[in-house]
Image 1 (cartoon, helix red, strand yellow):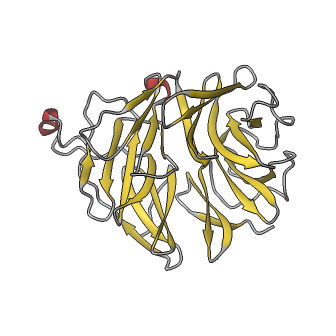
Image 2 (tube, helix red, strand yellow):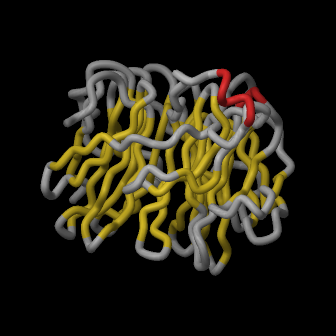
Image 3 (cartoon, one colour):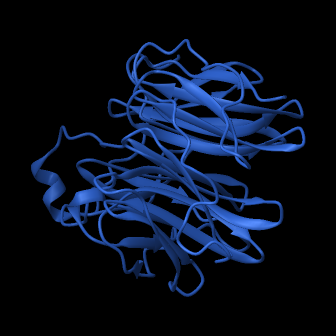
Amino acid sequence: MAPDGRLDDLAVVEVDGAPLVVCTGFYKLWSWAPLRDEWLERPLAYAFAEDPLAAQYPDAENDVDSVAVAVSDGRVVLAAGGDEQGAAIWNLDSGELLRGTTYGEPYVSSVATVKGAGPPLFVASSGVHWDGVRLWGPSGEEPPVELDAGPIWGLATASIDGRSLVVGGGEEGVEVWNAANGEQVASFPVDDEQRAYAVALSQLDGRPVVVAGTDSGKVYVFDLSGDEGDDPIHEPSTGHEGGINALDIALAGDRVALVTGGEDGTVRIWDLADGRQIGPPLTGHDGSVEAVVVTTMRDRPVALTAGRDGVVRVWDLTL
């Protein structure tokens, strides 16, 4: 059964050589196998079940609107949280709670899977609810690692030059950390009175770069190698009428392409090297686009987008 109502977030993981999409919205969680067009609602154990106060709320449901996934020991592991729920981890197939949360834990604005070798590791931020970023794994025996930061709204990760990097977008700009030791790698400002809701890490002409989309609709690209200092590598890209809620990066032909989704309901593709928009805006969503994830289907790069209309759309990125 496909979801009915808005979608807040998407995550993609490869299972048995095929993409599996996990999406959430309105307290529900679904998976979608796009090559079979199979939708499944995925019930999850209550994230607060281990908290003694849970008995006082027998009818409470999970509030998950940010999700991340990974494969560990042959199972799909899901990390999720929301505006009124701290981050927890489940076995997606069984719905079993692997690491719960408590009523005292900070709420979640964004969660992502840390890219790199080793057991699954997730990172979460909480926007205005608390300052900082947390790294944690499925084991409840290991406390989360705190990364020093202000309010962070959007998160992304990448493995670049052997380092597992985390980028966060916040009230005053963009920050980058090394997940291995928690040290800050770089910090980049955006124009005054702009908040970076959407971020990504990639490489461009052999250089590591940071990408940020703001609530004013601008896209910034920064050189993480430090050659450009704090300045973006080209003028910020503009085109969205309103804020940019989500973005992701793909290799499309011989170009590095950036895909953005905005409050204006459009999806846009940009050449990351020069910041120019590739083709006209992609339309079809009825309402704000809340999630953008790039993946591969049948050896072709595609972008999956979702939002307030509750529809997942697939865009061919072959340029």
